[in-house]
Image (cartoon, rainbow, N blue to C red):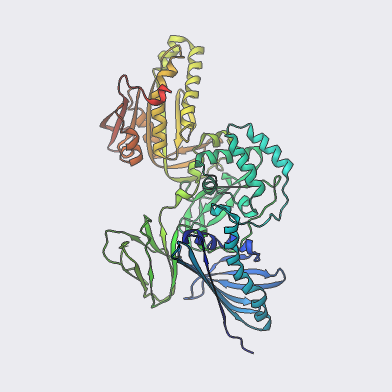
Length: 609
């Protein structure tokens, strides 16, 4: 007996805006957990001939019946619709697809339309559709209702399933008390305690600092500090996830920086990458098993929320054309063919809104972003095309950022790379300071007093460097080398040091004068004497730039001044800027520099306070 495809359509209007409804429906892992679907095991991506790549998936329906299928890439237009298709290799079904569509309503709500198609192979499959398949689709609507009834104000507060694991509340109380002794705001101790005790398994098994900061409505750096101290207190584990720069999916997870490899492979994108600290190594946290047993079970690995930087994704068969809607609120967009990784930049200054993809690649290097773009596939194979944000690192805490924090270096001094290993950092800012006339200081006040003053000046520097998201890498005699993730943080620290030096000198036997220099660029992170250190041209230039200081000044490269955030910090009446060029030892050609000084008699608001 041959069974025909059974298609079911469910529609419902809800009093949620389309963006919120999308965030709920498109988070397939959270939604599938809530509605009680079975977790899934996925294999690496495969491709047969000219067929679209897929992943083989395995699960047990109802916990009993083993089923295996090919799961093809999701197709979606963000906030508009998404579709998923499965072709079964075993079990009572041949094929399944589900499409979710969202439409605005006149009263600012959203109309949800779910279209589910099942192709049963036998009576068991037909019965399974009625017993399990259709109720599961209906529960998607129930999930939205439950969110509304919960009164949640944030997506991160969506309805949750009770924890399957054991929560050790006495141990959580003990560790929270230990965390409260750390230099963190008391309110965050309470917030983290509640989060670990009340959130569902997935939330506490995969804690992303950026998402947690958003959930708390807190500053990212402050949230990250709390998580680091909580890890030291034993409440959390930390892990380093190597992220593919294209699909943004974690490829491998390590418990220590020393386990990182210099290269990794993404099976989905089919490319090898260097493990760049600045872009591809991300820090995450999870609840410690002594506090709670929790697992982030996998239900989906290709849904829209897995790759939030992708605005739209479509399968385009050979010889077919599809249209992409360009979101006008998004910047730095590009089209990319998955696996081939051929790219086209979206440029609003370009007129053409038509693209053709052939076996030789794209027809143009750029395409207009002012209207919908049509993409025609004339190649010999079907392709998957993604419209994505090219810059997504703002949504992650990279290794480059966290290893530049003084708290990280203080709390996890053993977290270093393995000996001989080197990891590239695409962009880092190095600050050097030097104590001018230190030899005379020792002659004037004697070795003991001079050494004490030098130590005090190190503490003074650390206060302002750590207070601006930086950390001291090492001291070299009476000089300091510090690292920052962002140039504006380094500049802010340097200004604070020079602005507050007069107040520091009031407590000293002899006044000190500091020369400061900073430079931004690429560097290499290495293990040097069991310490995370930095080497390369950027470090060398930063040291040479500091040498151009005259005392009481800050010397920066012209490139730093050209950056909007840095220019804004320097656009103050109490600062004098002098541009000049200098030939630096060991560096080819003259380098354009800027000397920054405080005007005589200027007093900043920070000094008054």
